[in-house]
Image 1 (cartoon, rainbow, N blue to C red):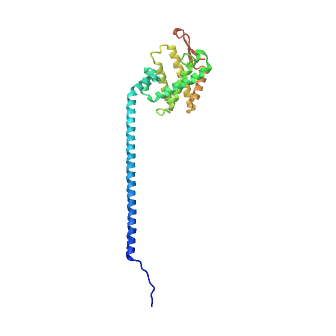
Image 2: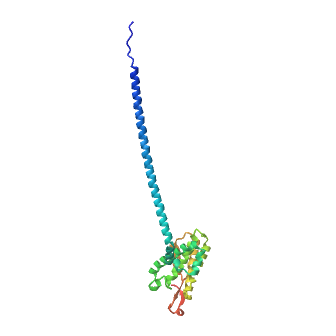
Image 3: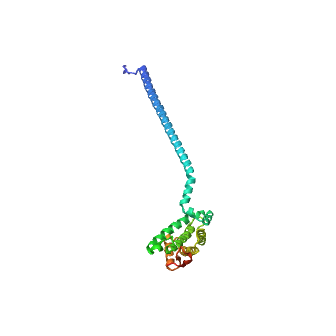
Length: 255
């Protein structure tokens, strides 16, 4: 019987091929490892470079901040002095400053009330009056409105203040104390002028009490309108006569 001839692979050739494939695989693994090691090394260098730059920037930022802080601290006393001289605070009487020592939370609000009062009363007076009567800083109709507006807005500011606010009568009392302290000034030698201011201050506070008791959210403009109405109703006072001759002056109803 004849059997078919079978050609079997050469074992040595198979082994040699396997070895060749293993060598190639080893080369691939080696190359991959080398690339990975190179990438890691490059990544480490980049990270170190970024970290170094970040540290340098941070150090520079800290140094700049510290330098600026030192500069500001050096200038602080002079800045405070200039701020004091150029602000309303620098023009306060001793009694006013004593009031603010225990009511510092009202310093800015009351200053704001004065500035807003000046703006509102000046704008109105320039249209409503002529000559000196329109000057809010003279003993005039405009000045009467100015004082009343200032006091009314101080009541509102104290009433709205987060510290000690919410009590309308207490707010009016704070406005009274500060406005009265404002008149307690050695420079105020004209008693009739002082009487005029104190009267109009009271009118303004009463207006605020009436308006805010009905509408706690009333705006400055709404309160000012009520102040003007009080003026038109003859509730305010002004001084007439020669300021150089106080004996000739009289406190009369402002109209």
